[in-house]
Image (tube, rainbow, N blue to C red; front, side):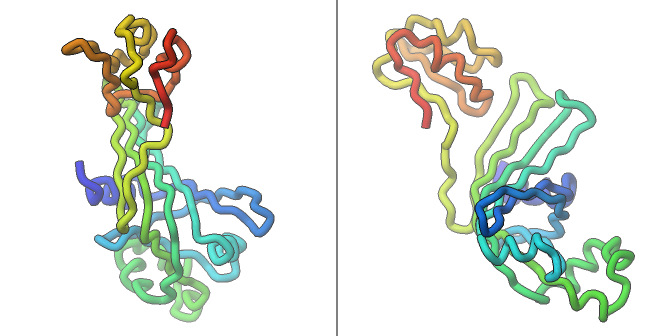
Length: 207
């Protein structure tokens, strides 16, 4: 699937995410935020300028968020994004209220909405993670001229002796031996590290 598919899923199906920011002492803080819209330029949410969340966003422009959907662990699908944010003010505020009409109940008058300001997540690396299928499925994506990063990936280098010990301990059976080469199927990998720990020649590396 492409990036817009995941941004749409995050906005219109998950909608409420847990977003992490840091304060001026570099202490982490989380809060629940509604992702209210998206387009080719990124994701949009709003907050009130009197909130400490607003102060943290202005102090540090880097955020991390995770949205989760599913009634149980094994029916869950999640989207995680690490990105950059910027304040765009009242631009798009009316459009966000029209798309998310429940906001009129929270800020019912034009005067009350003067406290609000819109932020854009304009750049980010993301990952979709699906535990509702077997084997599990994960896919990375990026937006805003940001290259998709492979942090956390395990891969097998040319030192591999094809002993197949890693295959025996893989919980998702996503390590395959084909054409005299052992390979990890990244889209099904749990990143558990079993292959890394059991390899007798240290041929498994982690990005």
